[in-house]
Image (cartoon, rainbow, N blue to C red; front, top):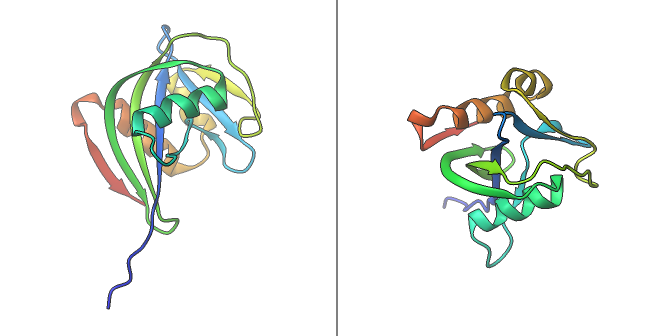
Length: 136
């Protein structure tokens, strides 16, 4: 018999400001990454990303579009990705975010040490190729 696997569902975003810069946060364990987090019971995916971005970075967002899904097979995580615009520019840090910055795409890719995180960012920026779906 095949065993069913339970997945954690997350919702994250590529958040851009009026200068076209990307919002990044520095996680204490994973380093630089896009903001987002786990979907809570009774919460819609878009509600999750709005809440998580605010909690982690202090930035209010407007969700513009759905980008796609990435699946972390070994960790049993399914990540829902969104494109969003920042509604304010005053960032804040938290326990989950040691630093928070807006930076250009090249700088964001440089800061993100995890290749999978870079791939998620690049896929979200390929607007003509949404929705995407890939696994790692």
